[in-house]
Image (tube, rainbow, N blue to C red; front, side, top):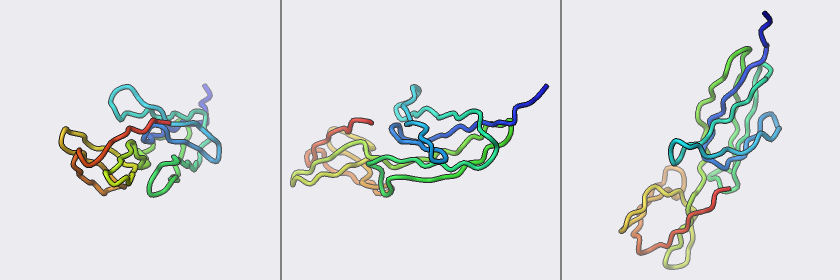
Length: 139
């Protein structure tokens, strides 16, 4: 019995709507999963020659960078499980009373306040009455 000399890779990239390129070739865009609200389907790449592959992920609204790059290694007859790679992509637009607008990643909306990330790691709480909120449409 002959064994295949090819391998596979499972890319775990978040959030949905992120463009994925492997070795300069467009693979596609990440898609929402079905199990949880923030679930994203992994991308399974099959029939890969053993070796190193360079993956670039990008999104036009990502902060602080529009893209990230990482390398994964494929081995013969194995599936490489890549760790989760995430881009920080805003999902809401806030408009303050003074007209200033920010694109943010929403954490929580209650009757009295909103909690959001203004940029990666910067969590802000604002009175609900001081802002209007618009959910950004996914790509």
